[in-house]
Image (cartoon, rainbow, N blue to C red):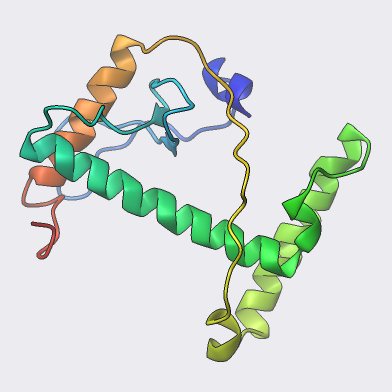
Length: 162
């Protein structure tokens, strides 16, 4: 996925103007950690030293997004436990199995889920596979700055973020 994202072969939607903003269109991004290189479509935190309020807020909001994704994956992998280890299938079959599990998972969450079931303990993946995607590009820096500005703006902030 990382190579496809870097080479613009992943079917990512065209950039769009952020809600309530009049600024330039922002690209759709994948949220990553420090194991990934910052790029136009892959966001990671600002380095932790010497952060101003705007950069601290960006890091906070990005961390919230990452936790949301990790919890969603925890729910998914709790239901389909074989995702907690390497999948022992031919590469051409892996995509079909993943898509089938996503469809079944969404169906079950929509039609068979109960609040008690969702309150169970979720297991987060213990090992992270990271794929360096090259050096930090100036486009990635501009996109991160665009999101930083937006998160501090009246249309991009939320009441209790401070």
